[in-house]
Amino acid sequence: MKNAIVTGASSGIGKEITQMLAENGYKVFAIGRNFGEENENENIVRIRLDLTDIYESERIIKKIRKENDINLLVNNAGIGYFGLHEELNVKKIDEMVKINFEVPMILCQILLRDLKKNSGTIINISSVTAEKNNTYGCAYGATKAGISSFGKSLFDEARKYGVKVVEIRPDMTKSNFYRNADFKECNDEDKRIESREIADAVKWIIGQRDGIAVTELTVRPQKHGIERKI
Image 1 (cartoon, rainbow, N blue to C red):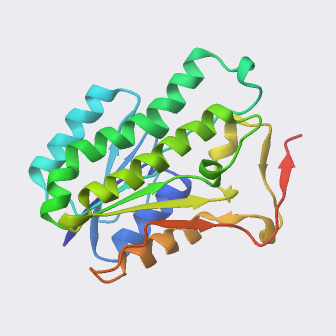
Image 2 (tube, one colour):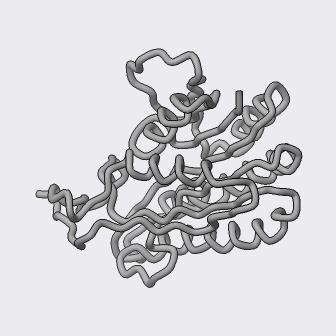
């Protein structure tokens, strides 16, 4: 049985990825802040953890690594605050940098030797904002651009060991991600992505043969649109 670590696994995209991996023979260490009443699945180990606590996160990941060979790391946890940059505060900027950028780099650093040994895969769930200018979201976009740059360089560093590093860039996705924004994804199915569809993309990526590396994948709805919260 292969072993995976998924962050941000308690809801949305992370929850769907966790379920998909468990259904496909992975033992999944699912990391999240808050888990509700979940259906029991013997392949899922749920770990409540605040990833902004960097040193506690390091301790937990090292413990998992010591007891299990890790084949797959999915850096999915993310947070976004939107609006004029001058209206953000230090706490919000710090939280975005830690969750979206610092934590994935630290987890990769802790697990990279194991992933090299196992010819493993790292999947960073980024955003379409990584590749464009982001008015009213420049700090958030910067964290995603940073992890995009990191992933590309890490692939070049580790590819000779069989390690795959993949960036998935979803557009507007139906989840609770926009809880801190004054907008949300559209109700129109043609203008949004479902969380399970990103899990399907992960399934396709890990199904590729060893000699093939899909390094970037952008997923967009056919049409563009957002809805303002009332």
